[in-house]
Image (cartoon, rainbow, N blue to C red; front, side):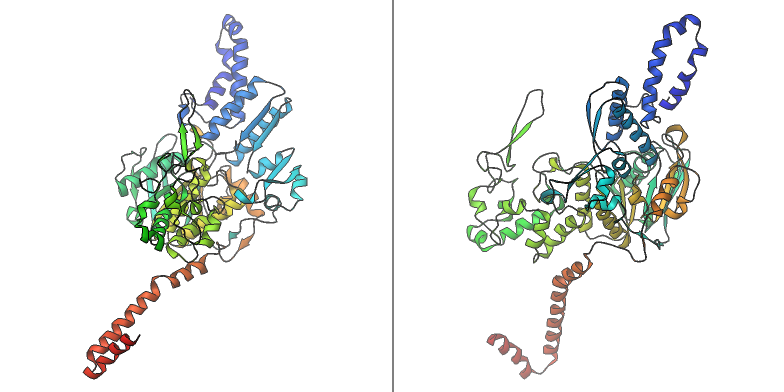
Length: 567
């Protein structure tokens, strides 16, 4: 039984009880109805009572705690919440905002760290921190009521007041004419769903919380594809058949799980660019004189690393009954390497200096190293220019980790037949970061790939080529496809809740004829021009000259030889 069914069952329970039972249950039922009401108010009516806590998303867990706090009726409390709107449809977001306002009206203070447009505009007071991220941020750029904030000249206010926005393509992609069709999906609350995904397009699955989006994509479609291409063991939820597997050559799921769980993992090691950087340092004259190989510049191998912290740069202090504490190594002072290794420098920078560089700085520093530049540029393109190459994976947010994974996939040579699956990629992202993400995803699709996202954020939904809306409600009242087509077609539908919010978003959007992508295409051409192409041509000319020399008379044969000697 889900919470909505429980609310209906408890509503008229007194009619089924005798006089003595009613006397005993009166106060209990009053309290039960109140607590169920709080759960419904924060948009959790679709959850089943037997649902395991481990299977709840971060947003669902946070809203259960919020419902508990509203139920305590405490006064004079300061509540601090970090992105409570995660995983919420716009319809459910309205309920959450109302619950937070009720908490305030009781006499409490509510501080929310949030990127959601509706939540920001519903606040009494807004503090905007910036102006940029990382080293470019850390200042309060504006503070005041939402109206005062929108009159200021900041990046956030520009997006809120529609002075800036993510443009929408007027002409949607046609795709490659092929499809992937999943028939008869019946897992969890799905009601014999047939899903058709037109390939070569930017696809978006929408719907209210608990409508069956994750059941269909994450728990049914992805395990089928993962098992077919990579022999994965995870079983999919029940379905009848799938068609069109030959129309793609692999599937990649880019989620928000950490890229590593120890301080040793970092963006440089995950993307593979650190291997190229170590090879570069090993090829330097100083390294060759000392006999250093690429392994000398690895912090995971004995020889070049600091042996006190074994290359971690941090010492782990185990705390009984508490999480471990990390402190900088007293020998290398967090530099990871020993003194001899750090004496090898490229453009005056040691290997530690390179790891401490921001991605933006590294793009300039390695501008003449195409193999390194290509991987670092993709990190910059996905909006991660502010992180350092050696930043510990444990300090990256879920959204940052997901974009590091995206950048890694972007830097690989693809076949143009890959299906990328992302679950709520806008989690934790500012409006400007969503624009970067949109550019990255569009670039993947323009190469011929298919991108499938599960999303609630209207800024990203509106730029999709094809939308599949699941609903109409959450839980038992969901599990069917209520609308599909282009954003404009779905906005005209009367079924489901997505259409209403999408229509409002499209009304304020700017349409463009040509795709607006990140400005890296000329650089890519320059890279191609700098890299193997000229060498191939030169080799071709040498072969031609050799062939001419073979067919020429013996006297002419000697001339090229003498010329070479002179040179």
